[in-house]
Amino acid sequence: MPDLQPLLTPAFVPGRRLNPAIYSVRVGFMGSFLGGPIAAVIIALCNSWRLGRLRRDWPLGLAGVALTFALAAAAAHGGLPSVFGAEGAYFTFELAGLACFIGVYRVHRVYYRGMSVLGIKAPNGWAVGLPAVILGQGAIAGLLGLLTP
Amino acid sequence: MSQDEVRISDLSLLVCQAHALIERRRFAQARSVVSGGLRDYPESTELQYLAAYVDYSQGRHQDAIETARQVLARDPQHYGTRILLAELHEARREYAEAERLWLDLLQEYPASPDCYAAYADLLLRTLHLEKAEQLVLEGLRLDPSHENCLYEAALIEMIRGNSRNNEYLQRLVREHPERLNTLIALIVALEERGDTRSALRVAQQLLRTRPNSEPCVNLVRQLRLRRHWSLLPLYPMQRWGWGGAAAVTVAGLTLVRVAEHSLSARLATGIVLVWLAYVIYSWVWPPLLKKRI
Image 1 (cartoon, chains in turn purple, brown):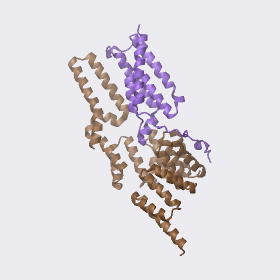
Image 2 (image 1 turned 90 degrees about the vertical axis):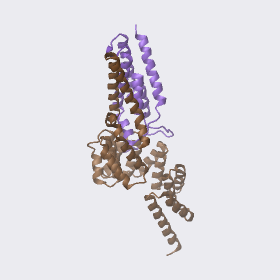
Image 3 (image 1 turned 180 degrees about the vertical axis):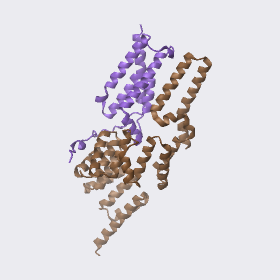
Image 4 (image 1 turned 60 degrees about the horizontal axis):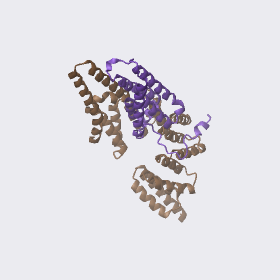
């Protein structure tokens, strides 16, 4: 007979009534698109915290910050494609945000699919999505201002 | 026949009658039978348990919890009441309390696949997928054709993205073709594969057998909505979900940006207006249609 002890170890903390669902794909998608990579990783790390896997997922935060910094440095030194026009830098951040979201989606895919298959309702995303977009846009503007010669 | 024997036989009849009414989901009648029975047999834990069950089924969770606790105060080992109390805690999102009850039951009944499946269901619905999977596999080791374990395992396979070669779903359909769980799992799998037409057909069949079931009505409504002709332009989103939405967004925005800077002003304005109309339609029309259907 197999050892049942790991199966009999509690997974929940008594008295904690947290909604275990994570913020919806819509919140991640829109937040990442509007707020760039920083917003994408803020929303992703909030989801990781809700899932209790922040220790595993924290490198996502580093990746988002590094990507934002690299894109800001490239934009400040004219290294982004000119086909998108004068506001091309912001568009590049939007695309990078979506790319980050795709990466995050792959990490949290089973949870998103679990919510979809089981019909689990996501929590209201405004409280996380809006500050994430503001912080993301603020970081982009700040970095572009700092790095532009 | 002595008077005590008559009383016990009457009580058994009442319990049977209440069970039959609950099985047919006639909760109002079951309530009146149980209440009448409790006036004559206030000490009956079985009738109290059924009263709690009827309260739970009718959404009176607080009343159900109080009655279930009274039953457990008299008979702490009452199996049905312990399961009911765990489900009540789960419904109230008191997950730790529900888990404690399931763990106690598992320690007392380590060979019960029912307990493994029920605890796995709690974990699955709170997104603890890995542990849920281990529990279900243990349940299936004890009983390879256990319906609830197969159902949970089939759901886990679907969540892991394996809707096509879902071995557990195949076994569920083969071994329990007539069960509600099987039909639900089948509908979910067909929908996940993008075969909404077949999913709708199965859901409509399910609705025919349960015409008063609100979840079944909602399911059919939701599937009919997905197959509506006016949603055809949203096919990439319907078929590939948010992956499709991301691809359409990136393609549309890139086209708009390139058009603004590389094409004539008139053509660029046309492209921008078409794109804006599509975006507005994709956000506004599906909720409006949902209300209509």
